[in-house]
Image (cartoon, rainbow, N blue to C red; front, side):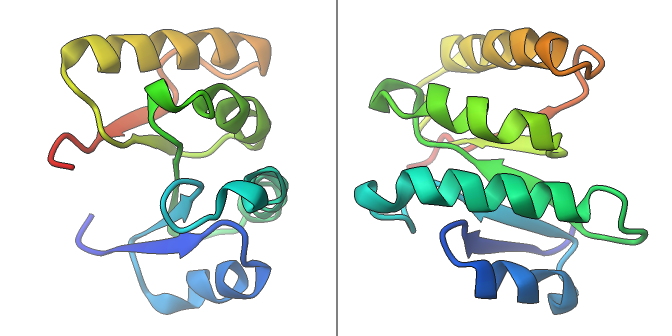
Length: 129
């Protein structure tokens, strides 16, 4: 991947324009770019976008940036978007390997629930925040 475009997941208009950007990956952001009050709606919009793009040939990679594990919001983020089968999950504010293992366990359980192969979703870790 050479270019990644962050797109606020609460903006249907911005998400709709994302695939035409030429970016190699779109990051559907549920974290910093979405106000707390808008997060439930952003999850629904992200899921609908994932569903609409799943079978589009030549589409960019679709990555969902969830809220940090300690925020109390990541479970709802994953529950909402996993049925849409994103290509990867971006884990922000990771504090070490234990956070990555914890995230992997959450993904593994949800992959099984939604008929996805174990390990189908990659984890992109942001550890510099």
